[in-house]
Length: 438
Image 1: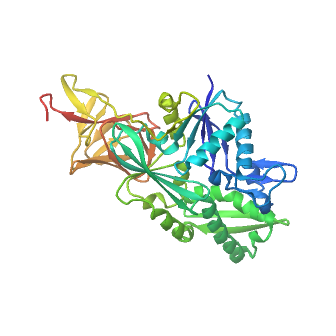
Image 2: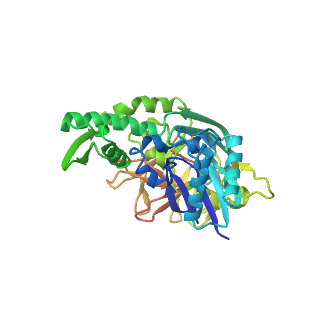
Image 3: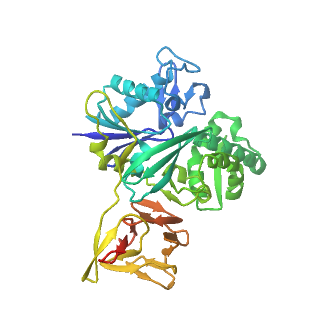
């Protein structure tokens, strides 16, 4: 049976089948007298017709009246219905749907969502917290923070992972979403265009639209580069402006600070790929790991049975089993050892050989072996100090831990798996006890 997973985040609603994303659509609508544009089509018109543009209907998801209602679209719920129905049709009208929703949704909004889905003739078989679903496949035992950015807010979910991943609390930080960030950057760029080209792109609706269209790529480039060049053509003249990374970070500092006020400085963070696109923000977080954009869908697929609800009433799932592994390893093909999943890793297993961890760095080489000395090809190293196993990624590289992209440091637990995507090398972290006990 065809099962479709819909992740509701108004920055970009994503729809996946078999963990493969097949549709992406921002939560934006432009309502005309006769037409309605939704998603990317609306985003491309948003600054041409600002009085007809709406981008809070998924955040609010209620019967609140629109600023400029029409006969057909009067409330936020009307726009959500039109958007969801359009996505459902584009996805091929799947027989069953699972919704992954942010922890910011209230009970009333969840009921509204299910009512809208019913009006669209969508068969909803599951409702799960997106932070829980995206974290459920991580083999660890700790209190985590899950951070995700939306158009108008940051959602911080505290998750406890022992035998299951359970949501402990949710904090919503308002007015620090991508919309606020884009507005701040657009203001900086407008000043730069005026100074460098004597041209104000915000003075004309069509050039304002062109400017905003370039902002996602601008952020992406400034993640790795010191500056970016933007161009806008108007009346047969090309206007240019250079934006430096330092100036961008200075402009975003007040927003970043407000975001950080809701984040604990002691608990490790799992952040979504959406949040990782913000230049400089990841470096401000303690022990941060970036989730892949497929993480929420992989969690939903893996725990499909636990998410499914039986009967007419759907349960909102806020806890799922964790995939902490119980392992038995064989070292040197002789002595059978007991391997625990709790506590800290003591060894790393590669190609049937176990290397012990200690206070001195153990370098994990891309071709599938370990070294205690630096050889110039290192991407990451592991140490065991004060009963904490810590992986440090070197030279701005990226590795994958349990399917997540890791760019900085990571506290290793028994059962964690490290992969080098380029070479295919795999490392498994374990805790080894003598056969007679500790």
